[in-house]
Length: 356
Ligand SMILES: Nc1nc2c(ncn2[C@@H]2O[C@H](COP(=O)(O)OP(=O)(O)O)[C@@H](O)[C@H]2O)c(=O)[nH]1
Ligand SMILES: [Mg+2]
Image 1: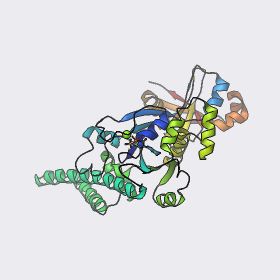
Image 2: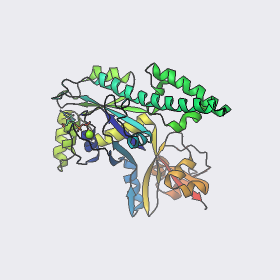
Image 3: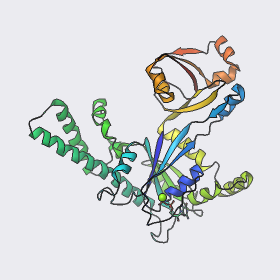
Image 4: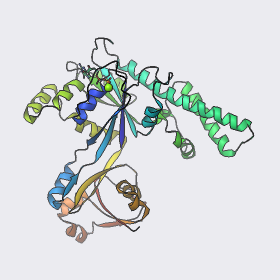
């Protein structure tokens, strides 16, 4: 799973990225022309993994991860001037979700914060990016049809793209548009950015953190929202003394680290679940989307497992803990064999049988 951080320059993307990952990428730098995004792998805290590790005593313990991508160069008007480079755009398209970072602290140059205005600016950039894609494709389709190569597929694509164009021209995101399965299939290749799920991160100052109820309620009309005190939390995650960090957090009214809040929030809002694999070699958690199947789970582990899928041996973490051992799970009839269409549940412990 990949979450891309987008926000106006100076909104605190890199600061939050550092707070989440413990990285040390330099912040500030308005004139920064660095084109490459920062990438980090954030582990998803999961006490089930720790508990299983105590029981299996594996050689390796691996938590699920979410990849975070800190984009640079996303500024107002960037879509229009092509300010998003082609390679950046290609990368944004591969994100599963976007985290929109909104500045909620005063800035020397930009002045007082206005998160709702900034959100509108970001949304506009996203939908303009899509509008440009739609218009370019429509132009090409028109050309092709004019050259006499009219096919039913092309016409179907043209019909839906015209509908998208009208929608986007009314300043509305594709996220809010209803699609039939057939339409979704036709447009899936575009990976439209205004169609991606969005989390909003309100990046508050140390002084106003926790005091933004009205703002957060307003934002929650449209999106799921989480509040961070980015600069503060970046400092926090650098403290080596955990007790000291805990004291600072209590003082701010922060119950958990930025990392665990973001990963939990992402799981909740984006419908992520974890399944587990166990053994003496490795205990590991993997991320899947709610509704995905045993075959998807197999493919997450390795494409060979999906290709040669035979069946999934399955029991739930809760049953395992209640029964105390795999043997007891079997004796109590909680051990299941599932086919490739089985919808995986959060906390399923899977063993994929396969042949290649
Ligand atoms: N007061 C305050 N300043 C912040 C906060 N987050 C970021 N900043 C400052 O805002 C500036 C821009 O931050 P940066 O993370 O580089 O923003 P980016 O351009 O979105 O990556 C830096 O000087 C940060 O120290 C915050 O939560 N509170
Ligand atoms: Mg930055």
